Length: 362
Image (cartoon, rainbow, N blue to C red; front, side, top):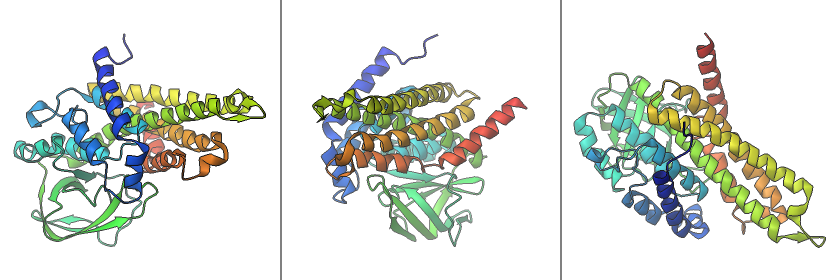
């Protein structure tokens, strides 16, 4: 049995890595961080043009028709290069919810635009219950009222899929009665927004059990985000290793000091543990295995811890300069903190994992 990716899949990963290394540079990411752009438009265009972002979307709806395994590798590279693009909101969540719950007419109308990068979409599919709102969402069959408190890329999205009770609701964010409010976030390269709806025209997605679809989409997104986290953590380790081989203290490379070796070894072991869980999640996602909820939760927990640990230790390994604006350490720390809260916190996913293990034992 082969537990690794194929040569063709690795070729796609290499192509995406080369493109991101050229375009998702520190300067490009900082432009978004500093508010000079809403996202890296060139990176987003390239990811869609080469079929990388839409690897898992069927060709009938404008996607590349490859599969989830390929999308996992794209996600890893996006995390490695801190891609400031609406990949998670548009592809992992909104497009997947549309694909699984939408009618053929709804999919034909919206998915090709998402696949081409012409439409940026977002979704709120539960997992944000801790964010309280004075006016919960309500749908009367034609119009949507209420507030969605936290939406990924909500300030720039044109379309949203929202869970209202057991239903999934599709709403055009350029329609009437939509008020957007940008929210402060630890990682401005992945912006958040609150959106208020007042008699906004909307439609119900066709799926009979929207709540079940939402859980399935969140599980898939957890696996893909785990790959982003593994990619980011691996890049931090590379940066720390390179710096420790260049920087000298007391006439020696600081990488020769045992204390730093131990720190980097700890980062490496956590990354490899998270990678093993992410690979298990990728298999479960690609094969639609019944183990997906358990695999997704395990991947989410392990990758969140690995990325946070690597981001914190990466700053320490760079010494005093690691705390400065000049270095990119804070960019990875911001992204680690942001991803730790997307689609539910680590604690929520730990509880989900515990529930799945108890269910299995019973």
